[in-house]
Length: 361
Image (cartoon, rainbow, N blue to C red; front, side):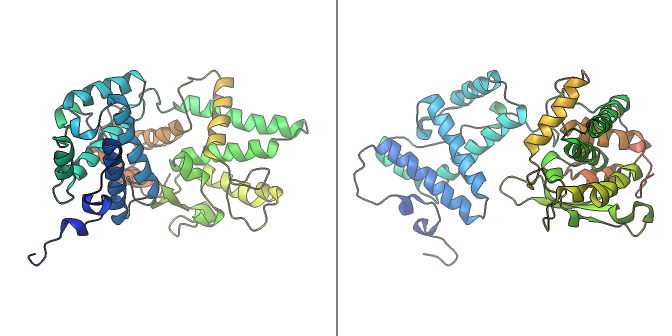
């Protein structure tokens, strides 16, 4: 073997590692498919991909096997088209369908790579071998970072004010009547305002801790709440969460968080736990709970049923751009990889008209 050359048997996930030579298989097709998937999982783990990513990709391959009722070494481009039509008919989002297609395409790249020996095994056992059937002309294109359903739009400033007023009214009503739940209503009111005022995603907000807040030396008016460190940002497939620092730009929101942390939150008696949004049981609030409360308030106001808490993040982007904040600043605040994604939040927005403003208004 030449210097620098890697033997097939030495590669994680290769056929020689997963299948014992000369052994007869009781159900050869299913056994080879299982070995392929186990080999692919080993190859991905060797690249330090997340366990959930590896597992979900394998399940997606199994979905296509079940749909076609056939094995990867007999798949054809027509199978991709029929599967895609089936997924579209099921109401799946564009980004979800694209992710499914990419997962199976990556699997086929692996089993078609001669270094792993899977094509050779299939040819010897089944008289055919796998080929790449996912191509540019039969798969969903990548639109942008923002591939959310189009109905999930930003709220207008009037809608946003109505929503926040309702949040505050619920606190006043519950507290005034002496009923239980006013603490949770107060927490949720500040939480929704924080999602909007920082442009954070739902899980990013739920995972915030007290220690994530800090002062901004350049803008003392925000006190101890001038910056927030987002530690659980949206990650690329198989990568750890992205982290970023978000600068406070709305003084009213910073004051609201200060009042919550210093005056109201201690009533929860969560001890040394540093979570920003505790529940009555002393646990961290779950995104599903935030979703449910938002839907309750949204429906009570008769607002569009398609609106979700993520629309508050869209509203933040749109309103900052409309107010003339610098494009790069907004992009960094919300953690977008591509600046073009911002254009999907505010149709007709022209970056040439924006003014640079890094410290807030």
